[in-house]
Image (tube, rainbow, N blue to C red; front, side, top):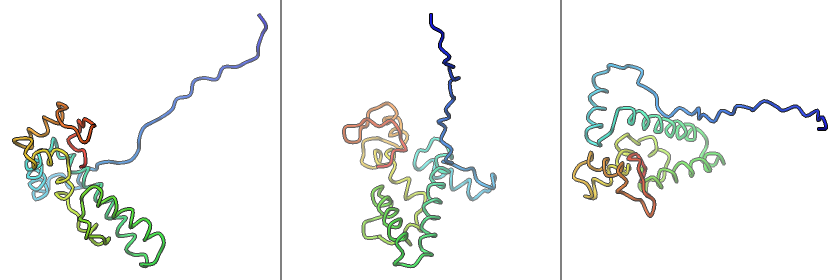
Length: 159
């Protein structure tokens, strides 16, 4: 056989990890008011663990940080108009804000219950398809609920 001087390169390892932080634990782990508030939210919305609340807190803090940065810019600034309208459109599409609330100041006033109200689990319970929020979570996980023609198995799906 003819000798070829081809050197095979070792296979490269690719790292497909996502490094975006989606939740962060509280700074004070045993603050009584926060613990009570989180426990009440977990019971009211049928959450699996408090990490689901912490995840929403990170999302809201990123949105608030963006809104605060945009509010420091003048009203006619191009970045404020472009990114501000994108942020407001996202809030309107997810249903966090009403259509008439189209100012960045309203983004600063968003709370965790505003976001929890838009979860698929909460909506399935509110429209009467389930007897409780826990029943709604079970129905979603057992693939009984579809959004449009797509079966959704994530109770945290935003509707």
